[in-house]
Length: 241
Image (tube, rainbow, N blue to C red; front, side, top):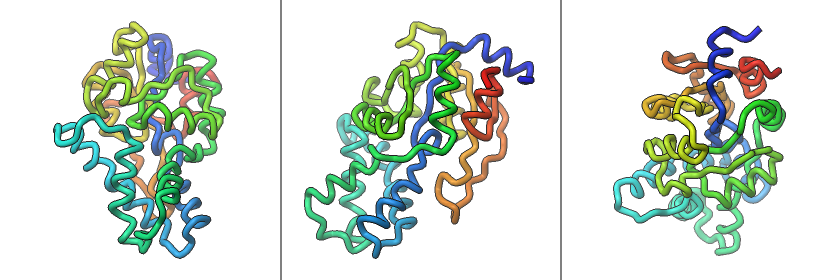
């Protein structure tokens, strides 16, 4: 039986907005697998981590005004060009760089993601809320079989999470109070920022987000409405499965 808190949340929430990288898709494992195929001489684990490490600093340059509005595809390419020499890949052609950069469009879902989203879609409107750009998220959904009702992106709001414009923007799009939107994410800082805007929050455990050699602490933290092991677990908690 769902916990009484889950029942209360389920009755008051209309839209579930999902973080994507790490929560719905396995960015680390996907990049490691592609590197093994494209450039097997490279340490795929180190490459994936180095690429992702540039993500926050690149977004910070946009948020500070140092860079004008820049989509994640372009930020990923800037980071990629910067790290290629570290891995002996500085001689990649433009076509090779473009193909590798689009690995983010081809990220594989976690095993529970498609089934969990399909169940959640029965009762809720399900939407992305990602820093990824619209084209990236659309390609990813098509490739991974993710059944979104709506694709919302930082690109829509011209602001990156954790800017309040992103969380409050979801509520405005659907003409809802913030408390009628629940952010679902595997990152406590994302959830904390959403709560500060009045959203409900659900944490999803993804201990392997950074790979088997870098197990993530997924201990519960105070403040979240729900703490779930997977999207299937979230569906169960919300009375669907």
